[in-house]
View 1 (cartoon, rainbow, N blue to C red):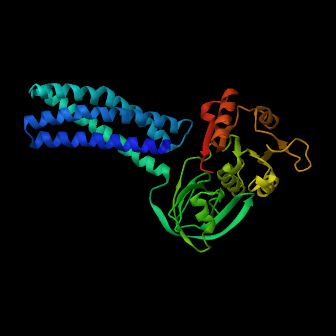
View 2: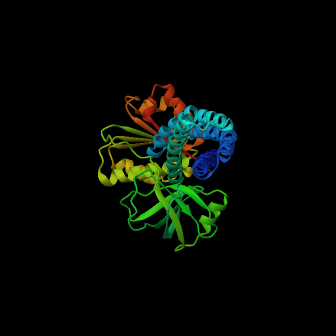
View 3: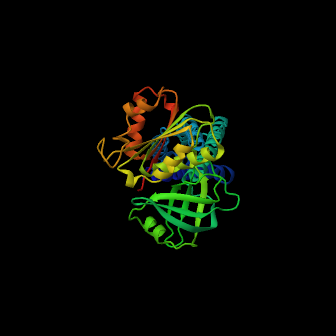
Length: 377
């Protein structure tokens, strides 16, 4: 919902400024002084639309981008203060000054100087807002789609969770941790899904919790060999470039998917990066890919798996590992220096926000906490 509000307000703001800018050019070139004065009055009244729209864009954008280090998100966040300052310090004052002078019939050198400043400021904002809209489309994964991808198989990887395998388009290359937007042929539904497979694998694999949504029903009913569309890869939830630095993964439920791609890739490339995964589930039956993760941990001395079950009591015969939520005490048992790693956390919104607050409260720097929230289970 917040993403949709942000997009609608951004589009409204862009169209409003574009209307102001083009009407100004047309009236100045072809119109009379009376037409110019009418346009200036229209622009001044239009500020009652533009200002709230831009306030909503700024507030929703700040909320959506909070805690994210994606390159596209960072670029959008850097442009927003320029757009806001340009609007409040130039466009709004110019609208009042130009309307007042036009209403009085004062079309002198100062009027046209102010008019030039307004047009330049408007052009700058149109450019920056257009770039933000472009990056927003890229972040949504609704850009160019690739056809001809075929479903090749499916499997149950945990209670209520299935993995889906599909052919990889020619030239498709992703980084571990990225996602695709999948569109189904049977109901036209689409959904963003993290890529489970590593870049070296011949097929693409995604996994999801099977709820009763229209998309999930359509995906489950899709026959093998059916063609679907994918857009991507997208997203910047990827490992930092410093391979010497340790990383800690904290996953809740289906949030394991981007991490599994990273861990598979590390095993394939014999990465020396020190990785620890804290993987939280209700019980072992709900833990997707748990057996594979245990095998990967046994084979890779640089990867340690700490699986914890929140629905079981300690010492139960059904589980001899950790129980309870991932907290600071659990982290301290496995991390020699809790402030050394970069932390990556994926899972349900409540789990992600709680983990981020926990880490920040422990003195972990904000730039060492990378989060991604899974919604729409």
